[in-house]
Image (cartoon, rainbow over the protein chains, first blue to last red):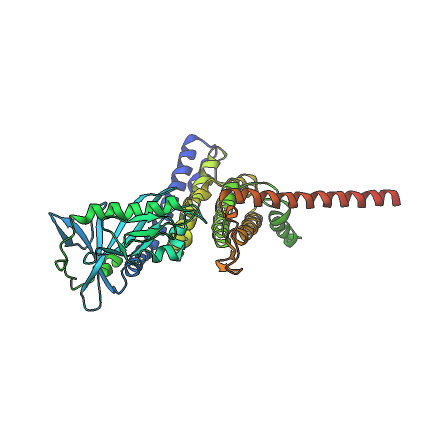
Length: 227
Length: 214
């Protein structure tokens, strides 16, 4: 391929150097486009599946979901949210009844941004589940925010009013308190703060209970995966 | 004879000129991603793919790549293979890809790979270049794995994610943190050099005995 052109020029003039690099770059570009295009469907499907699994995990009993965004003063169903637009996921059970919201939230942790997804039931004003989607917390210490089963289970019925408070291990006495992880105080407080901040940001935007947007006929998560 | 030549190129990378234990190259991924055995294997396989692929191409085109732009050409070839490895891992094993994070794209900057292109692949026939690349990559994999196994057992009480000890085992957390990498590598290098020292001493003794015997 590159060879024919180059072989005809005996002395390595600058033209030959430019040509060699241009052809190498061109072939490399084509190879990269090829691998990108051929892996993109799998990568998108993986991400959509991971999101669905996380939503179903933080909202027990949920079997269907749809993406919701806040536009013009109300929560509406969308096919594909705009980039950087805040999204929540509405979770519905087999009977298409609304169960709760799965809210993505992110904030600074000990090392880097922690991204989480938490399940919220507006009727009971309770967090019912929490899943860490992304974190670079210290292995063995801060990573207990997703490896410590007791800590994660602490989010299965946690009142968000007035706000969640992380307390010293073993001293939880109110429904809005959670035992912090020994040796990972900063990371566990960060998770609590992220949930509190997201809750404050969304509290005025969520519709009153029993007025949640109904589940649409086609499941948006499927169309999302197929894109 | 030909078979011996290939074997020689292969085995030198695995043991005598091991990229990590003898040449001390590729330290960045070596210390960063060996906190578990599975990460070490993924990194080793990705490096193997990139190194063998680039060595094959560089060696095949070695007569057509002008000397003045050879480094740029090597880097273009290496970067292409790294991008392919990056997307393939992301599609096939997203969990491992997440753990390795930025260290997959950083294979481009691994001096082990560019070093083999410049020192070997660009000067030798394709067959030997590929054998050399496989040897070096296997040597790198062995080194990564030996660190990964030690660190995961001590730091997490597990091997390939399988718990080895009862609940009473107190993990030696520092071993999966960066200092653990330095400690483990230091101890392994100590053994490797001690072994080499003893071997040289032994060979010298044999030579001495032969001389006095004659």
